[in-house]
Length: 425
Image (cartoon, rainbow, N blue to C red; front, top):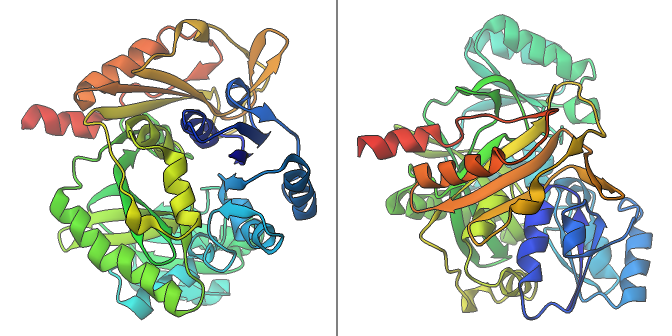
């Protein structure tokens, strides 16, 4: 099969790496890609917002399937346009992708299907939102309704923080994403990520993961796109997985199918494990980043088989096999991230890395001749396997130590919660 992979992050490098192992793959193109993806795919510089150009490229190259990595092209309907042109694509339709594109939409699905989630109010003006915040009190969560590159959520521990977050949304800090605001009850518990792939009717459970959103050790500092992750998530027992499938995932798939907008693709549930059981925080409609990196390190099955089964609507005929090992990834980011940071700094030392147990997935890199340069905020994902979380952590940080990049930084405690659980068991 000839494939086109869309995206340029660590998630897409992990997908390219996994797809390249499939015996069914004959040619892999990627746009725009990065220096790591270029090792396994032919890069092309398409304007992904120009759906006609993407369609023309697919026709000229005889592309059999398009795999869409990031959320933005999904939310604006790239999959719809590809399928209308007779080109198979992996990912949800524009209508189904509103599970990520609009937090208010997701809350509506939760209401309709009685899915456990945080209590909430939705508002299209600041005065009403502020009145609700003051009536509820802090802590409370303020969310821009639309896509805000992972930066539109404020967990406000004080009333002042909540009011500032509401004003920021309606004053344009998140552009059109903040035109409507969802204000949620603050949930206490432990967060986990759960992934399934759906074909519109069936849902194939993949695996669980936990990530670290805060920039610095001890889960301190500003929120980021993710500074590391590990899989599986120890908090997600078999009983909890079964509960999530029954009370959250399956009702979501069923509700969208009944609405005439079946969900096909990756459904990523952000969960809070509370004293009352698992509750849905939010949905993403694609693989997480950096969760995708640890999932695909553990996946033994051919990812292309699973993707094709989703697209062709026969997921009920296959299963997913997983390594028993734990996978853990450490994000190396440019100093200053998630604030301002320099681009173009040189990275050395990657040549000695790469094995069955360690992979370095590129997230924001480019080549300048023989030099590898940082080209983003989150730049590398150093990913390792181990028999335990502690083993995987050691293997990952041993690899980090071999990378020569003075302008980068990483957290030193990825996996700390799971390691604490291991030591107490």
